[in-house]
Length: 110
Image 1: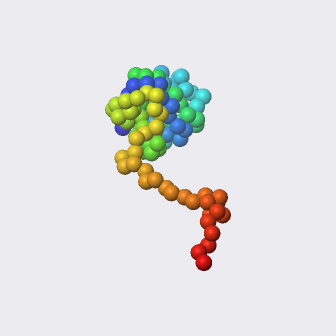
Image 2: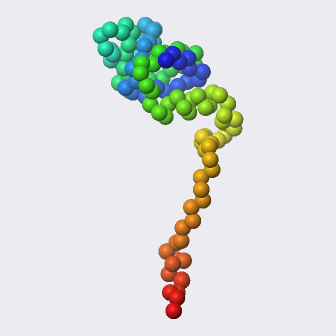
Image 3: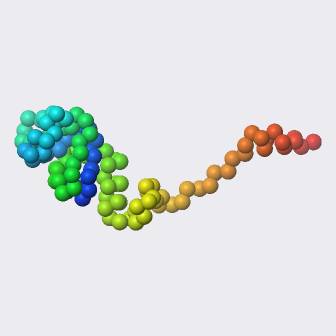
């Protein structure tokens, strides 16, 4: 899957990807070759940072937390930049609890 980053993005370690020679030169200290058959395929040994406009090809699956958030921000679902939380599809149910103080004040029925 090819991705062109629209903003500065950190990719977690252990993600296999195909990089250009320029991208490899800039990140040599944090890369290990991936497999024997793919030219330009590497795995990050630590989180890698990519600038806006850089394109990489991800090999395999991404961690669940990386792209869903990235895609929602880009698609405009999060319109308020001050809110850094994702909206729930369904509102969370209200949980009612009884505190210890309330339990102590209650008298048992006679």
